[in-house]
Image 1 (cartoon, rainbow, N blue to C red):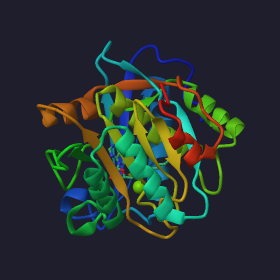
Image 2 (cartoon, rainbow, N blue to C red; image 1 turned 90 degrees about the vertical axis):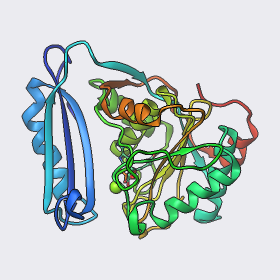
Image 3 (cartoon, rainbow, N blue to C red; image 1 turned 135 degrees about the vertical axis):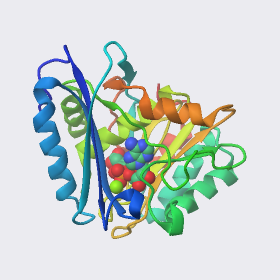
Image 4 (tube, protein in one colour; image 1 turned 30 degrees about the vertical axis):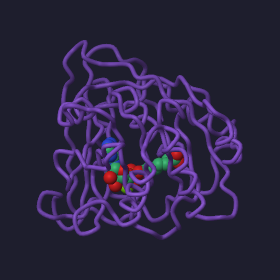
Amino acid sequence: MPRGVGMAGELYSVRMRAAAGGPHEAGGRHVSGAERIVSRLDLERTVARLVRRAREHPLGAADFIQVTVERLAAGRLGRVPSLPVTTLRIGAGGPRAARDVAAALLARAGVAPAVAARALSLLANGPGPGDSSMRGAVLMDAQTGRRLEPDQARGVRVSRLDWAPGEQRRLAEALRRAGALAGRDSAERIGDALAVASKAARAGVLAEICWSDDPDYTTGYVAAPRLGYVRLPGIKAAGVGRGGRVFFVSGVADPAALARQLEEEPALVTLDGVIRAPLPAEEFLALDDRGA
Ligand code: WAQ
Ligand code: MG
């Protein structure tokens, strides 16, 4: 997807969120969200694309779409290197087996096993109020399992980020070359998730687990600075509309300040880590230090 020739001049953060049954604040069901950082030249077509993305979303027709356009202060844009990407082969064990691998990876990243188990069941049941989805992520203490996000209905949204120009296309090519795309895997979705995970890792998040609440997207991941971004195909059965995201942190004195950093500090992601060909989960787990 062309994103303009350069990032010189004025930059804009463009953010979209969509809901059905009214705005999110009035109890509407979250349908989709996406965002970009673009130059002035790309501003209008970016707004149009995001509106189209909301309207054509598989979770159903949105009747509330909000697009926010905000000029970024000059010189405030951080650079975030992307985590290395590994796609695991899970075998025939289905979501159960993939979640066991996720738990093993989280333990390796420093999350207490009981806390990892708690996060997995939270995502399986829907982490929002009344077992709904959240718009943002749960922030969880990696040792106690305590939820630290300031707003538990909304969660923490990693925001004001995008790929540097051309990088998302390079990522898509690298994924294809590595043979990492199977079934309904979407390079665009991987790009969005990898950007979020890379910004979170950079900000000091210890580990993350995520799978989509979109019924037809069944690949999830665990990410951590030590592991990289580790994709777990089939971590959810097709047709299940529950999912979410958990950021695990350790020894964070001020969770609200971390949440603000994740939400507000603008950042461009550059393709940095390797994109590996798929390998069996046991093989990855048998290796000690992976990733960066
Ligand atoms: N910041 C924090 N949490 C978010 C954000 C964000 N920017 N965007 C979404 N979430 C949370 C929210 O609770 C959603 O319900 C949940 O994550 C899932 O979001 O093949 O598509 O956009 O490697 O449905 C991961 C695997 C796909 C990609 C994840 O998530 C791959 C996905 P979705
Ligand atoms: Mg979703």
